Image 1 (cartoon, rainbow, N blue to C red):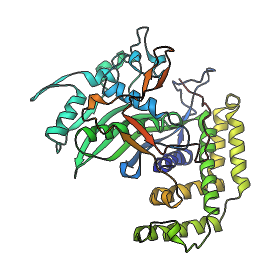
Image 2: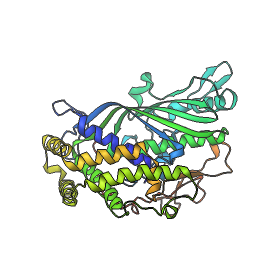
Image 3: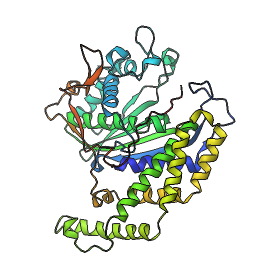
Image 4: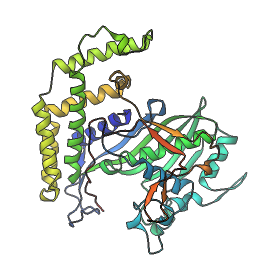
Length: 404
């Protein structure tokens, strides 16, 4: 598990509970069967990830971190707007017959501008500042260029980035105009956390904090059952782990580092939380009912209307399962050490120690010369350790419907 899981669940809890539905509005996205893809959304979500808490990749469902990092390199390192330079098919539907997505993303990164110090493109200017003026307060990039929007295959979703160096740590503020929470809630975080690590490494800095601002954070109507399934499954798993630990355990040396006062303090706080959960249980049948109902809807999403999904979300929010999900989520966000108390591993991003040049990082993916398929690149500069979403008990890898 990772702290990113709990931040993710806090966002989905917020949308389910407080989200505004656009049911009565005319919307652009449509489902493959032609029905409008409506959403529940909240305004201005700001999620903060400290890299010291681990690499922010969710274990709630599989995140293709190799494809995510490959795309961020495609944009910021290759400065490409052609899918022939990308080792995935995520941009295929937006490309023209030559593979170009127009003047979007990598094209904007690579455009040069004049400064007093010479001509630079956006990423090279950032690298120059980090090397020469790390205290500079205008390390800003922007991909949402209005004069070029009409020539973009898709308007940029993640569009603005500002960097800050404080006490030897590199921090990033990221602006995103819109986010499909189920399909891309972890994808963009993984990308820019990796970019933060890369920029910090080649600048001799420590990766600090990623602050991710999303203006329109939404859940599509047909994604509601998947979100319920995911949230209820994670809370059920935590309750099972808490129930399997003996209450009032005095043999702390088996659990914590001997002589470390921090661990004993963490244990005392955790034990209070655990006793409250165990002594006030949500019935196993409540979790099973919520999960079964969600899975049933997952299998036949096209049968339900937006109003039915809205009613399903409202019913779930008023259930004991949702209240417990909120309680567990809030506790683990406030106390990230609870992950360690439960003996859960946190994911970590490992970069090639020999890379000191941003342009020398090698993608995790490559194209197989014989088959043309995208495969693991043995020369990759990246690895994510302790990322095993199946080991955590969540085998949530079903293909979800995608709105276009």
